[in-house]
Image (cartoon, rainbow, N blue to C red):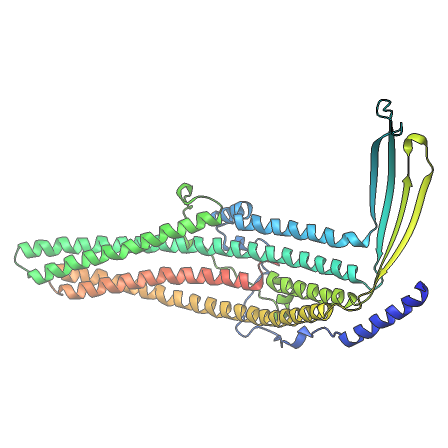
Length: 453
């Protein structure tokens, strides 16, 4: 009867699964361009895996190295990788036989019903059993493939997090250096306004200027001091953020000094847009998750088929009496017949998850292309803006020197001096910010390209 039932069960399983034919989604639907629209036509080298060294700043190299060793988020991501390795080992276990051993010992009364003549006897038995599920329809193999892809996705996510930390450290360091330079500019502006105030006070005491000019200059000094305070606050907070990225407490951390103007902007080879599919860890993670979802579909389809379990055991009934060994072979078949839609619902769920991940994968490709183009545009704009602002700052400096001399000579009024001073402050402060934007745009480009080759 068993031999007749098996073909009927298998036929039923095949008839059920015939309605669940699955065609993988074509992820090549995204039209990837042949080249970037705003790629600069310059000689450039491929980014080094340690891409941050391209800025030629030893202090930055040390900060990134410390962050890679001490950042708590990176440590947590590494533990998630270990969890995925453990899950893969569990998923692979059903592909091999399971072997168990057992030993039983008992103590019993061998004297019959007599109470006064208690004569205990010992009995010890041992056995070994093995079981194995025949993976005829690939469910266990599919679950193992899913776990392998999930492990790959976890590793790529860990790499994406590491790239984020590296980028955040570099951007935070450049921001801190820029804030320090802006503080110097603001302090120089305070010194200049105080120097002019001393001159105005002298002229006021001599009756050469009115109280209006004195009040105006005192207001300028107070305003210059007020502009300094938020810059100091931002610098301290940026230093605190940098400390956390390095796994240190803000109280014990002191960021190294550096010269923003001495940091070079590396020429970065962007490669082809299609290279992003092999370089960006977030794209690789999305692709691995898609592969895991496809394997889950195979496992869900295999659940419609029967499971066949084989077993074998070898038992020694009583080791104390040198009993004979008893062996046993077993085979079992289990075929789902009615599951109230559980199997169909599970298949529908994993198929929908696959389609969702496929859409997310295509969207991630589009976002990555936009990231690179945006970074290229920002870098080009920042470089041109810095050059214009450098010239503007130089001219504003000369204008302020001339205005201050003319005011001391009585050839110009105080308003001309204040206007020239304000123009100089604005130009110098904007120049520092443009330098920072140029460097952070380079960091963004490295990150958009997936780091180093």
